[in-house]
Image (cartoon, rainbow, N blue to C red; front, side, top):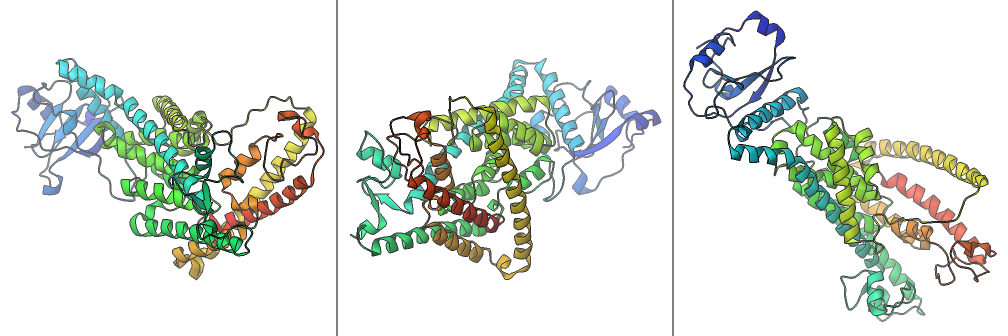
Length: 529
């Protein structure tokens, strides 16, 4: 059976292709025949295309007709009875090949069609009304689940990273699952002293070798390097064998996916599991990298997994990008403790499709993720960020000058780092080292651990070092070097009014060496597999 379309409809309509499943056999009514007489000229379709439909859109009516090639029947959404029309769940999912771009107009048109079905059924029955309420609230429920999961995952990763980092120095003999700080708190509830903790056992002490022996430092150094190389080697092996997409920070690929590109498996469950474990291992190994970029990738994995619980998003790639945009905001929120910063990142940097409703949902998702992270309390301070600063002293205008020089220095150092890292990445691609990623990771990890061990500021993890630099000095403070002031009669903000001691001078030189080492380490580390 063939139907002819008028020329006026050809001028005003654009045809978009999508798939629809085979529905039950329908009888032709007079209205269907009248509509069909002024519609498409149909030709027999191939078996593979028997379920292809054509959605006719125009400037006045976004979606007006659906044609089912398997039956040669034309449907009009506005005049079909409720018993004859397909339900929204029968609408097929958007299917794209790997490494292809999505059709934004087609997917959004399909969503408008689905919404028309829901609105029509809402006026017919109570179940239709309830289904409409569920559909309207499904977006908020989905981002709520993403925020809850992202905050919990971030807290678990922070706790696991801290435990693995302390594992390089020793273990809590009575409670091996505790890190050094909590182990010492369990032994002495009055205060925590890092250098004086009887409950914590270093690795040389496990072999009855104590500090007054020379081999104490040799054994400690060997265990430090062994754990660092072992953690990094395990992480790179897991990535190479189980989830190759888990390598790198993930932010460039996330921006590409949010712009409409399809990368199958990049946001899958295996990528999520392996990257979560690998992130803890690599961060604890001491390599010069952070958890901020991978946290965005992990949050987007969570958003992708939860989106399949809601067909509205799981079956429509364009709508799924709304959930992924909110997930990216949640990832930045748990990484930096900045929900508004996460929304701005998703809006300005990551997302291609960002309607107004997505902005509010992104803020809600980022806020929930930050609240959950604070409830998990991985830092022990009930703060969403490890680097919390609360100073009450007034600053003088002249203090802007050193801050200005600090900004200039940061810009110059950043530019030099980018240039050096690009040159190293180009060399890596053409050298044998680039063909053996596991060997590269093991060599760089061993060099990083061996060079970092003698300096107490490079031996620490990056998070622990920055936290120490953010802390205030006081008479009770036991930090070596940085708080070595001659006058210890004041506390808090007035503590620095005393004269400098020898420990401050030596700490400045050690920090300068740490800056150079971290700068060089990061050049070689960033871009590894």
